[in-house]
Image 1: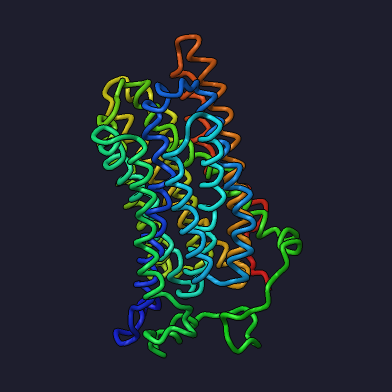
Image 2 (image 1 turned 30 degrees about the horizontal axis):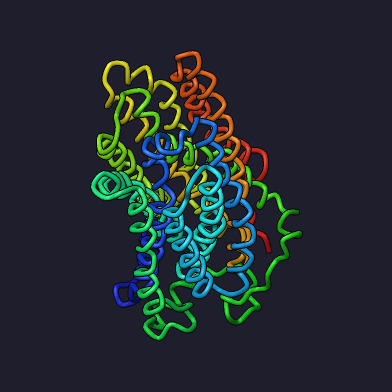
Amino acid sequence: MQNSLAPKANIGRYRWTICSLVFYATTINYLDRQVISLLKPTLEKEFRWTESDYSNIVVAFQFAYAIGMVGAGRIIDSIGTKLGYAITLTLWSFASILHAFATGTLSFMFFRSLLGITEAGNFPAAFKTIAEWFPRKERAFAGGIFNSGTSIGAILGPLLVPYLAVHYSWKIAFISTGAIGFIWLIFWFIFYEVPSKQKRLSKAEFDYIHSDVEDYPEVTNPEEKPKISWIRLMAYKQTWAFIAGKFLTDGIWWFLLFWLPAFLHSQYNLTGMQVSFPIAFVYTLAGVASLFGGWLPMWFVKNKGWGIIRSRKTSMLIYAFFPLLIIVSQAAGSYHMWYAIIIIGIAASAHQAWSANLFTTVSDMFPKSSVGSVVGIGGMAGAIGGMVIAEVAGHLFDYYKALGNIQTGYYILFLYCGIGYFAAWMIMFKLLVPKMTPVR
């Protein structure tokens, strides 16, 4: 069978330049948000935080992120990706730097809230960019590439932040990581424009990008389809399927991001730069899996002859089973620490593979003009799911720490981490959108 996924050699590859810009922005996004988890032992001593104090700081970020997601998605749909992405990255870079001026729990909560509401613009802008620049058959792979930036950011964090904190100060760690975003802005304004206005883009590649446009054929410019109101979006099962998927699974990733260093400290007494390599290993696996997650549906289309919907659902079901291993991670870790780290790495990898396809279901089911809004709504749901897990984690860990058995608290959270993806898949594809019918 002919490979329908591979463009002709003379089409051009400028769309991959755009994908790389989104990848770097996402890397910076996750580097900035992870700094506080890596500095948790240092900040706990300096500010005398309890587990609940840290949990409240995490919740402050997630609550603001949830609010920002809805507004950011709608704003980016209105003003476009070029200006929208630039504004949101500028604001979150400033917010990250401001953490260096925090003086206690309340000021950290304020600056985390500011970071959350501004970082919320990344994913609506990123997936809208991918929807604009890639045909449907390539979007999961492109999404997997840029989504691997979340893992690269999480890898760079433990390699960079503890070093800066040990050799300079925790304040320098916040300032240095926050300043990186301003370098990205230079390249964004040099290389980015929507396809219809990008002079570096060949007509052949432009036609390829829009080769599988299916919605609103009466619109001459496929980038200018009629917008669907926020209220109308909430009436579609397709929207609620994405909401369910994000709510049930995003909190798992956030839990690993914000509590993995603390887990390694409480379980294996790792501190400072000792956590760098284990965490980097976990997120290296996750980064590779993000690429695989986008590649597998393409492989099913090419080699099995399946439609994109069947390929997407099957891939996500496969990814949903791997996190079940995390339920036994602590038992495995009792034999050797690295058994637990490898299992957690597999679970994080499954999340990234799942996430690359979960986001792409939005562009599978909605016109490009509404992708930012739907991603924002789902992102809000994901942040609320993260808030729930953060609050539960704070209370569980304080309770079991008082009993001298904090490991039980981690086991309860890992149990949910194991079953969350399969539950999400069943609700999405058995209950809400079994056929993933596009909204027209």
